[in-house]
Length: 385
Image 1: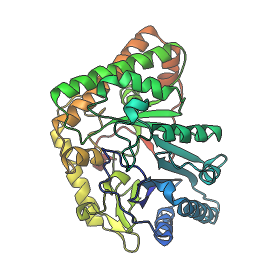
Image 2 (image 1 turned 90 degrees about the vertical axis):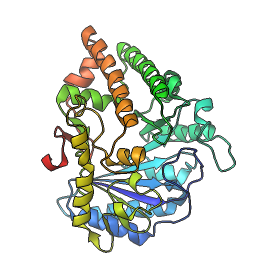
Image 3 (image 1 turned 30 degrees about the vertical axis):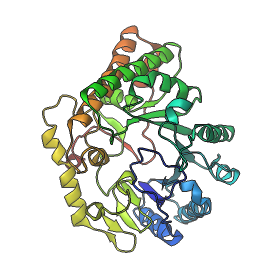
Image 4 (image 1 turned 90 degrees about the horizontal axis):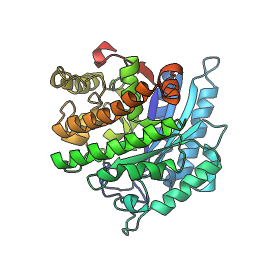
């Protein structure tokens, strides 16, 4: 079970491509968070991953700390069937103060997702504060603090039309920090043209060349979504939450108490058609079934596509980002997913043919264990899960 708490709509940055809409102060009351935690634990999950999202969650450190302590207290009272508890911080790392580091450092099971789009020039094009000043140096300082406390983190890089071709430079800049993982996503609000998709393909092939280079050197780098796309081919499934099954394996809670299927759907908390319940009233089963049925419309669209079991067209949030509607995809989504798969396959084909030891060990010989709250999902449709 993944419970995502949207702590506030407020952020200290003003990134030019933010998909969460207008930043405004609406802080989640502690009682709302407690009710959400109680509902999640009432399902008796074997694992509970509690994520903090926003806005910038660490603007409200006291609230985050109180929620963490409450979740630990409630979990400890569950007797012999204690769920495995993990915490995830989605942060821009610019307000990484000592009290936050104290909370997140081991032995507490915390993981951070940090937004970093590359070197200073690339990152500061879009990730700026309200005065228009770049945030790169502050982010790098926050990353250094995470590393000093041995707090594992993933670096999340957003690819825009203006940075697609220089992805080789971007991945090398991120690699310098030796993160636990790297993750790449395109800016789905950009006006992607055929020419821009061509630049994306070229940039992703540069990333592939870097990855091949590091595997040959015996270094293992976990890069998403490339890893999951190769695993889908090798093992016949994806190490992800169970195919975006609305309202079952993942809940997101807005400051208002509204439940959504996942964090990116919250936005400004104005899409009543996406609300699946409330912490005070529980879940709307009819609404959940309706949203899931809408999302499954993509199965008809993608039925004959040979890449359908390896791309991420099952993700409702991606539909919304591209078209504004669940279950409706467009050419940009199809072409960008194909570009990621092509780059992944180039890596896999090259290194498998070479019988590269590091590659074979990573994808074939190790026992893959899904992350807490996730499973290997070989089935395509939610109704088959």
